Image (tube, one colour):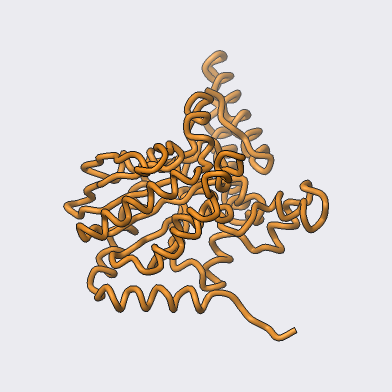
Length: 319
């Protein structure tokens, strides 16, 4: 399968093609091209550092949406020794856009709740492109309460373009389901760790995004609306999404500076899709460290700290 190339990666692809062509020429002609290859590979390495160390906000949004980026299921399969998925909200149905289950990571028993976009046409349709319906949020809440009952820490993996805006979802109480989750998660007695692994858009992300610690991978974004949506509303032109992304300050670095995110997880050069295993190990270490810190705090103190955390977010000015 051909590699998916983003616009800002085109210069890298051109250099990679030159290297491949040089290798082919050397094999076919028997010429010694080793010096030329070394020079091209050094040029490629420098170009990668230049591009990936100076990404704009909009370019990071594009990386967060990369179709090869690991999803919740990819991480779960790599970080857990045991995984048992649980289904259904006990009211309407199951929602494949959110996967939930009991897991064990190095003898630590936890509840994992992750948004799943699906890979490939059939899977994407089955998962509804990661856009949860009310039953997805109600399933999440049911299992958070189950986790509370058995004293299991909760880990949420956030990666969604937003909650599903369809008529059926609205009829079944999409807004109420998300609002209920915000209220209940704010006072859940067990530790909650939220991790943004891709894109976190609007209430669709926030519906499983209240917790004691918010952790973001380096090339992710998290905001009340997508840059395109913001540009459509403010500028009447979705093509100005890059400008909107800068105005909204949506990236992990922005969130850390604003006091919203608590930690940024480094990614392999070019993004998590270049090395699933390395990215999964980074995620696993972050989960274990965060939970081990949180379980030493009493439930009441944890809830109080959680509420104070959200009270301090944002900056207020008198107009």
